[in-house]
Image 1 (cartoon, rainbow, N blue to C red):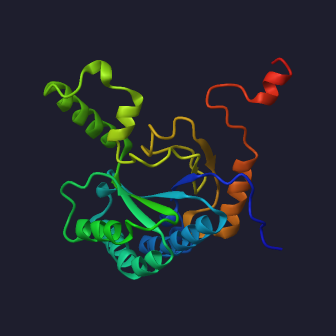
Image 2 (image 1 turned 180 degrees about the vertical axis):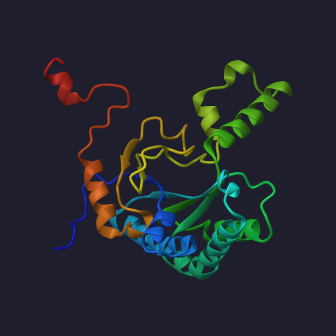
Length: 247
């Protein structure tokens, strides 16, 4: 019997896609094969998110620290990203998916930046699910760039220090205009955020699932959403039921 669609679907789900290399190693395959299998999981995650009514899906595709990996692996990851955009962009556009890219765009190599800009420009007017691709992204770097931008405004007299509020900071982040994630999910059993959406995830529900990313299919996603639906989100306060019993 197929997994039923969940209730109380989050507006925004952010996923740390972890485990491609381990998936390949367990099968005696090159790490690159794990990354290629992971692209298939990306396609299924986008389809499932759109099916259940998630409005924003953020995928941690490539961190600012990933450049430290072996050159051959980085090259393969870049090739997969380019192939995904070239192959899937028309299909995503047809499905009314809007693409946004977050991360540091300075000094990106070769034709990567033009492809990312093309994906954003082509789908800018779409009104379906927003697929947010975190590429060359690190949360501390993002916050540093936001603080530098605000500091420059203060130095040049456009803003006073007292006018720097959480809302202004959020407006300078790469995710400006995107609601904070309701659920941050990480695959592979690792339980850390790895410099991902640290500001935005302040009140997110966190869920760590054992499946490696290439095994993250529709049923795993729906099971995760069912777990989320059973959570009580308090945002630092008390839920009404607790207040009612005088706790």
